[in-house]
Image (cartoon, rainbow, N blue to C red; front, side):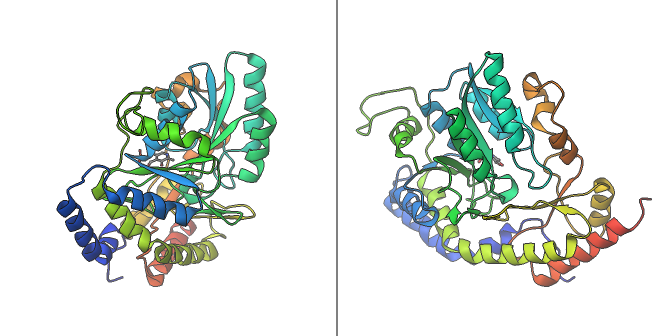
Length: 378
Ligand SMILES: Cc1ncc(COP(=O)(O)O)c(C=O)c1O
């Protein structure tokens, strides 16, 4: 291997878009509208055109992209929000910061996403107990793989609940021909630099299929003011995304589909070669990953990770602990635990995944992975 393998290669991508971003930055510095410049509306329109969402709002980060719609739903501490236990902590933080109560749901070993059977069981149990009022399901598209919307939407409808998608990791994923952002009534995503579509700092967006929430979210994003910005009509926050970040995301969006093709090619090599040796995260019928990360599950994970490290293959563990085991959220841990979320946290390993990996590098990762899983633990 001549070039070292990067887990995510923002430098290679940066070199590709540098001239266009320089020109964009110059334009922002020239017009001077650092907040709410023309790049904001331009990005929102481009995001709608890409995802098929009817409206979108650029916001300060992916956590705000979840909090703002929940504030718009006017959730109360007695309202239950059902979230998977195996996700990034921001999903649970957002629920609590929006003033509601998280109810953790177990995940499935096949797609690592929310288990619809466990979801229904917990909705019914919550209803029977009567302590909390079931309101919302947040379906997380973990590592880029769409949640099982075919099962989740009917459950939500049956129980009168809303579905919000946490697509922080899944920009570029598709489900039944719809892009992430155009699947659920409301969706939040993140433009954290390491995401498949990232900025050069924090950022995020909310996507709407259901326009009812749009106007209220727009007000909340701008300190709760009306469109004339004269009066506070509700309690809001500073949830805006600035013009410079919007300019970066616009230029990254312009190369996104080309990058996605490379991510898919790398994933195809990994899938074909590694399926016999581990349990890669899989998606169901009608789903397609955005390949934010490539993650598989295996029993001797820590030994394999150490062997790969010594072979120059960087890897990461997302996530070493399920949320209900973390101190901040233990108070919401269900009795009896969540067995699959607990099992996965001891087995998952994410391999290098980015559009600038060559086929040779992807094969090298596979060679070293297969050697590592095949050699007996020291
Ligand atoms: C599943 C999930 N939800 C929400 C977020 C929050 O995004 P941000 O870091 O932009 O606030 C992240 C970010 O990493 C995430 O992975």
